[in-house]
Amino acid sequence: MSHDVRTALKLAAEIDQPAFITLLDDAPDGSDGPLSGIPFAVKDNIDIAGVPTTAACPDRTEPAARTAFAVERLRAAGAVPIGKTNLDQFATGLVGTRSPYGACHSVASAAHVSGGSSSGSAVAVALGVVPFALGTDTAGSGRVPAAFNGLVGVKPTRGLVSTRGVLPACPSLDCVTTLTRAVSDARPVLAALTCHDPADPYSRPMPPRLPHGVAARMRVVAIPDRPLDLDPAYETAWAAAVDRLKLVAHVVPVDVEPFLAAARLLYGSALVAERLAAFGDQLDGPGVDPTVRQIVLAGNGFPAAEVFAAHRELARLRSIAERTFVGADALLLPVTPGHPTLADVAADPVGANARLGVFTNMVNLFDLCAVAVPAGEADGLPFGVQLIAPAFADAPLLDLAARWTGEAEPPIVERCLLAVAGAHLTGQPANADLVRLGGTLHSRARTAAGYRMYTVDGPFPRPGLVAGDGPGGFEVEVWDLPAAAVGGLLPGIAPPLHLGPLGLDDGTTVLGFVADTGCADPTREISRHGGWRAYLADRA
Image (tube, rainbow, N blue to C red; front, top):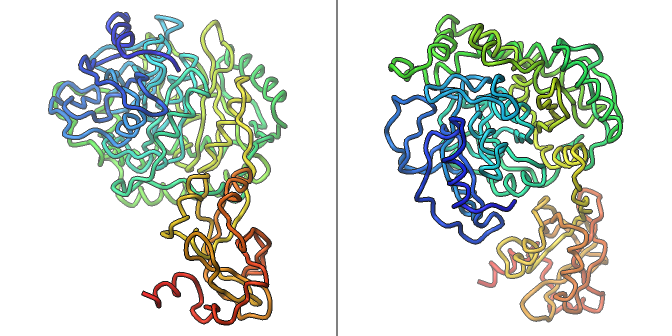
């Protein structure tokens, strides 16, 4: 990504679409970091301190008191926000036309919608104003405009990117998303955004290892086992996309009806009441879009019991849909069944919009991650597909998306488990070496029987585990490290310690810090303490 802030601001002021609601002419210089100096745009339902978060509603004029956590993460990485972008009001829409600030259109056709609700963010990236932009995606609001403008739209696992400082649409489903031209541009942005935020009740940390059943390299992709309800041009483009998929993955047909049924629940059941609870109190002002008001106030018509009935039906559908990912790594679907014109949406604002969500609405309901990627053209307009996978499969899904787009994939990093018992324990002086080398804590454990612990000489106080006839049961931590990084530890391991097999109390054997039998000096045995921390505590 190469672009400077001054150029981005100039381009933003010159484009002939209402992509921006506010430009930040006093954008500060970027700090040092992996995104240093790179300008980006922010969807105007995400806070920047001192600027009103309009959510495309001009009644909202109060400047935000604080900057959203996600924007702060990008600033800390060196990126510079240059403006707030247009959207379907209150992030309720997939068309990009529900805004008093004007309707955006696809960069490929002034007659066709841009897609929403992250319309301005998509247009800003597609027109080359900024290398990346933030959107949100509750029901497809990042993926649909990506598809209609030939972009990559990354919808991460729910909670992976904090939504603190994002005006809620459906708080339990909302996701901050990225829009870029390439997968390689999305990687460093998502890496900067990914951070557990304890102040966000919906935030979740990325597990240190891939979840059970998620492959590090995705090679099997599911597709629908029957024709989809697509516009004629989209049928042709979809068939070509399936053929293209067969060049990069094994293809298995699956029944996608549980996915489609769940998608219908989002607005066709009491689940719509979550939007009413999130911002229903803001729908009385003169600047509110009448279609948005109509959709959200429909939540008043559902008794509370129907909310629970909808969640019960959603759980049933999810339990069926999850079987897809037993025999496949990911699911490929079109992003939308067609590309409506501005006139189509004006003639049927609710129906035209609803049809755009039939393949996207269920992704957050089922707690899945997704990446929208370009897949050629349909009637001369950009056509996009989406790759969908289980929660926290974001990294291998991005690799699959890169393979789809013909970009280079990063090599798979081989990992190994290393047990530490002394100076490398959390809080001890050498623990920073493990972190520096990319290590993460895998588990806390105890050694198997047959070991004794002794103090050993060296550059700092440390213990040695010696195999023999000892009681075992000593406290250890097992760390997950890139296999290549283990070599980086070797220069700092002073004799008599070395790396060797170490048995654990669960019957497994891992690499660990051990000492030779020559260290078994009875005057230096500390086995009775049960571990290095306990020994240090007793000495203190």
